[in-house]
Length: 381
Length: 58
Image (cartoon, rainbow over all chains, first blue to last red; front, side, top):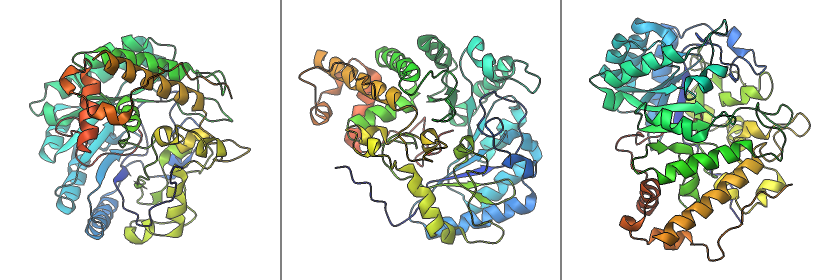
């Protein structure tokens, strides 16, 4: 029986700071703006200097209270909407308070400039860029506010990143949302040719009440099949980049640990700080119902100690959402690998989060395909 | 629920046996790397990942 008991000691391993609440593009599938949540509208457009100072102080205290460090991720909206000056100010504050912590930026890439990269290099903040594949894939859904394509601008940003003198540090990876109608091998080759050391793939957001785009039913396996084809290409490539999602599945099958939420049964400690300094739940919950990412207690870095926040009963209940509660998941022989997937994918208006993932069938298919492929490769060795 | 499990090899290699394999004999660099990382109980973070990982799935 897999142990689903939670650890009593809460340590944060990721702090996500929403440094900008708006975005310069309007991806069709965006969980922040286009899946029913309107929390962004109440936020300041950009993080203020006072909030940055409060966050810096709060994270310094959190760091001192914990045994181990955490990763800081600048997010949004589009974080580079901060602009060069404010980005520099923010990084200056964070580095003063957290001199040795990892700082990364998740960006759509369109606003990457040489000056921005110089600042990131100076303050040791690396970047990951969101791109879904070749233009015929990417421009279907990752469009501007007038529906215009964005692929050319994104690639221009990626090129600047690749060509920077500090690219080996700055260019940490690419992030792609799966389009199950695309050719997985085609997407893999295109993204590999962009030269990132690491590529991650995401399931489209959706749940039992609102199916993800491209998924016909609870039982269909469009996404699992796509990932299985991706795995086949990946495992036969003699010069592969790292594919985080597939690596996690393989590690877990081999009884190791995963690196990110969404697979395995590790309790991660993810803390979200909004643009106004308020503390929120995992922002991916925005895709379930309006306000799903808000705590009942109005915590803020301006008024509360983060160590007390993360050790509160309310935060503990939120953190426990990572573990599935559905009997289907708990009794599943692949629970240790699948972990019930992301909480947002378990939502239904009828049962709340007490469901298996909407991607359960996909996960089963992918995990079993991965086991089979690993056995085939090693049997032939 | 529809069972989408593929037929698996009857003599499926176990995780324990995989971790004992000679990595040079594994034709897949990606798989060989993962096996080595699990053996060492820590993913190689020298390039792609920072030692402290971003756990957020976005």
